[in-house]
Image 1 (tube, rainbow, N blue to C red):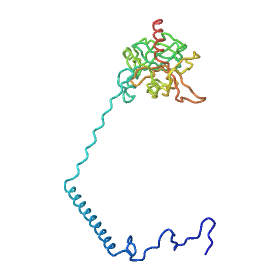
Image 2: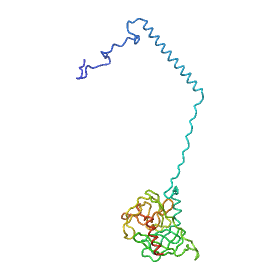
Image 3: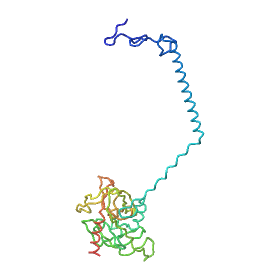
Image 4: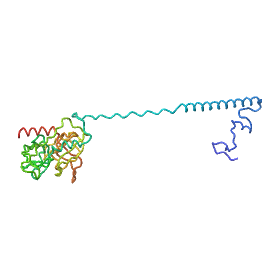
Length: 307
C-alpha cells in the first residue's frame, strides 16, 4: 500500500467506508427496518407509506378543484390607470411678471429702443431712455464733434453730446431731429425713439441676459448668455478707475460698447462696456457691463446739468 503523505493519513480510494458508519444494506432490504425484527414491523411501515401517499393525492385533487373554481369565477379586474400629471405653474420673476419661456420676447422688446452710434470714424451702440435722450459709453463719443444715431428702422438721426462722465464711462446724447430713412422725402418724420424699461429688481448670478448692439457695425445684433458674476472689479473707459461691473458670457465685441444688457423681460440691467481678451484673440466669453443703477445716476446727473 502506498505510504500516506505526512499529515494526511492513509490514502482513501473509492471503496473506503468510514469506520463510524455501518456497511450499506444488502439489496432488497427495506431502509429503516432493522434486521431480525418481526414481519409485522415491515407491514406497519408499508401501511404508513400508503397512508402518506393517499393524503398527498387528496391534497392535489382539492387544490385542482379550488384552482378551477377561482378560474371559473370570472376574469381578474383590470388595474386602474394612473392619475394625470399635475401641470407646473411658472415661477414669477423678481419684478413680478412671469419670465418668458425663451429670450425671443426679450429681443423683440429691446431691439426697437437700441441704436447704432456713429461718432466720426468711430462707432458703438446706445439705447433710448426717453423720446430724445440716448445712453452710450463715454469712450465711444470721446473727441467727436459730429454724432448721429441709426435706429432699427434704418433712419439716421443727427444728435449732439449732452455730456460725458469719463469716470463712469457714461455719456448722454440728445437727438436733435426726427431724422429720415434712406431714400425718404425731406421732412419725412420717423417719430420719437422708443425708450427701454429699466430693471427694478436685483440682478442674479445665472440669470439669462441678452447683449444688444452693433458689433463690428452689424446693427440689431443680439447675443445670449447669463450673468456670470457680480461686483467684478475692472478698469472702465480709457484709463478710468477700477470699478465693479457685471460679468457676462454673452458675446460682446467692438461696436457693442454702449448697448444694453437686458434680462429675460427686455429690461436693461447694464451698459455693455468692455471685454477680456487674450493676446491676439477676440471674444473669449468674458464681458463686462456697467450696472444700470450706476449708469442711470450718471445719466440723470448729465441731463440735469447739461440739458
